[in-house]
Structure formats: structure tokens, C-alpha cells
Image (cartoon, rainbow, N blue to C red; front, side, top):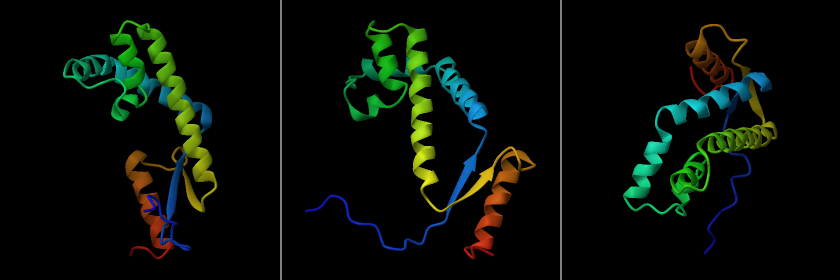
Length: 135
């Protein structure tokens, strides 16, 4: 039995990718990671471990969880855990960017769109209309 099947030769997909200046994106990702820590990531991980979730479980290997499991175990300082979490988040974002860059995507620069999230949503709808997917 094959676990993965080959994708359709011509999948019926429209890729819409949001883009942002790399330096601004990196800063936003670093801030987001810090906000997760400030919002209680360490306490969440501590609670999961206390309930018997092993740090080796795949779900506990996600970015942030693996670092703070080491903090709870006393193997890593909190500030170093945040630094590693931020580093790994940036690496993951770059891998996503690289993958998406190979796809026939419609890129929307979120800073060039007026109206914040509502404006971005409208730009996505416009793209789908132009592709004949809606409307």
C-alpha cells in the first residue's frame, strides 16, 4: 500500500500568496513568538507535561513546544528558548516562502493594499474573480 499518491497532473488550485518586506516579516515573526511566550506558552507546556504528554510526542516537537519542554526540564534558559523559537520560526517561514515561490501563485503585497485585513481579503476575492473561480 502506498502512503502517498501522485497529485493530479493539473490540479484545480489557485495559489494566493501574501508577501511582506522580508525585514518587516522577520520582525513581526520575532514579535509573534515573544507574544506567545508572554501569553503563557511555558505554562501551557508545563501543564501538558504534568498531564503525562511526553516531550518526544510529535505534537510536542512543534516550534516553541520543544524549546519550552527543555525549559521546564531545566535544560535550557527561558531567554535561550525564545531565541531558538524565533530562529526556527524564521527558518520555517523561509522554507514556506521557497516552496511557494515555485508555484504559479498570485502574490499580494499586504503593505500595498489599503484597508488592512479587509483590504487583503478583497484583493484575494478580486484574484479569484479574475481567475473565474467566483463571481
